[in-house]
Amino acid sequence: MSLPKFKELERSYGFDEVSIVPGDVTVNPDQTNIEMKIRDLTFAIPIVAAAMDAVVDTDFAIAFSKAGGLPILNCDGVQVRYENPEEILNEIIEAPTDKVTALMQKVYSEPIKDNLLAKRIKKIKKAGAVCAVSLIPATTKKLAPIAEEAGADIIVIQSTVTTARHISKSYRGLSFTDLCRQIRVPIIVGNTVTYSASLELMRTGIDGLLVGIGPGAACTSREVLGIGVPQVTATIDCAAARDVYSKETGRYVSIITDGGIRVSGDMTKAFASGADGVVFGSILTRTQEAPGKGYHWGMSQPSATLPRGTRIRTTVNATLEQVLFGPSHRTDGTENYVGALRTAMGVCGALTIKEFQKTRMVVAPSIKTEGKYFQAIQQAC
Image (cartoon, rainbow, N blue to C red; front, side):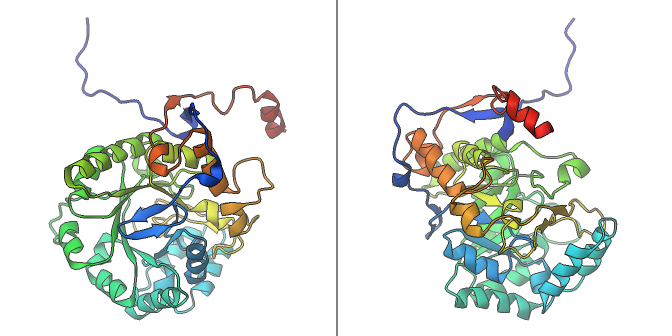
């Protein structure tokens, strides 16, 4: 006798479970176009530097922008709370593991200072770099106009889960529709992982969407809250919403896969799943230019009531140039990410990111283990 079911579970996939199928035609990697667009802004490489204190400070933002990518400064972090953020970063880096969360809770309780927000933006802009800033929904109404006035090129509103509708008895929630009418610069929001939430967010008038709940190396939301969707499935679903919305309106909202990318193969699978861009966090903390000096921590770790992050050690072992463009001296896919993307597009016959998004993919749980007996033995030793 068949029994009634309370709910049906859908199968979803992460990067390790899928593979990209090569094309019938190949092209020279040098001929591929990997530009990313956010409204009328064009970026030479489709990589976003995560809005995390260990990843982006003003100097890193300048360097990353000049390399062609989009850096996002965390305007809920130490850069806008302290005049000398380097001192605070060193305290976090040097703190014992069992005391670092309590330290962060104290450090991040310092009020945000409007003048520091404007000061950081102006420094980045003065250097000729693109400046994007990340705000949280609770502070967006106050800080977004200040950021725009100071010269920010893009405003990003981030939370663990972002929806177009928020129910609260205590205050009137942030309206993305109103914000898009008030702010002239492009607006990116996130994070989300579903088709329906993505489509509803796009209909508010936003310009970009961050996809991913809990996959980051320093994030523990999946463990603490039990929520999330593996990144391949999440990206595919959100990209479907983008295409439906584009057909409806003629507007194109860029999908940016945020989190879960460790090696270049993960990145290429994100694009093949439908992404227009990807976010790098822990990957960039390995660079000599990053302010975290080989450490990385989650944005939700300083929460006063429910920390959902951890400080991890990533170790500095490369320059920003090596990580992005090579030359690579490693065989594990942790350097020359741009070269890997161009090569993958070339073997699939894709001249543009949009063409690469249409590449065939297969479920392939053995893709990293098939025939790799000796590699597995060496890694175990």
